[in-house]
Length: 312
Image 1 (cartoon, rainbow, N blue to C red):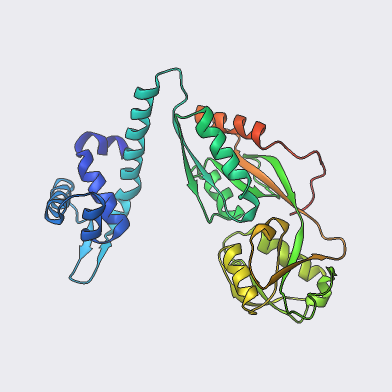
Image 2 (tube, rainbow, N blue to C red):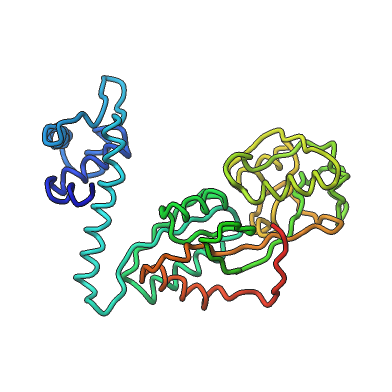
């Protein structure tokens, strides 16, 4: 479909279509494109006439994508990305690596690693466009990598898919975060069993969070099913809820850089397995841009000296 779009549609029509699809408002889309709204509306009418379909459902209150609009959106974005890559190639010349690499991440484990990698790629390979896709937990990242929608994912072990390669870049401990006035806050080490009656805050249970899986595993191993009062999509929100007294949370040590007033972190007692943070990618991905990013990652995110693969 992408090649068909390139052949029959004007580039400006696709730009306008994508802007409206993302804003779902003709006025905001026109302002974003620095053009008059009537001109943008005319472009979309021309595009719909050319394709013979209605791309948006419009009324006086709202704008929504039609089924045809949903079908067009991703190919249209791909056309714009291909044009951008072509421009980069023309400017940089044939000797440079030019391409687009989609990198997914979520959680605190990548808060140091990702900026370090991104800075190095920009400095060494300016022809590579990195598309950073946040709020993508390990399970979702592995699905995206397998489906070729994501090139490289910041994930955690285990990775069971034999088509996916991994490289370790860090280890993390499980810790407990408590309100600073909690009855257990004076302890330096807390046994998981002592949390059995506590309300918990955690990541969603249906989106493939490795931290959520590890939390459930250690509490079940301690003999109780945790009482989860509220779920939240990221560590910042979870720690805010802990500070507000909604509950406690079992999370990873890398979140301790988040300065949340009213929250204290304590070590967990017992033999608690660590989580292993990895980069993941398809073994058969031979994109020069992806391979270049992986080569840079190997240098700027060296594997820890430890070699034991602990469960996570």
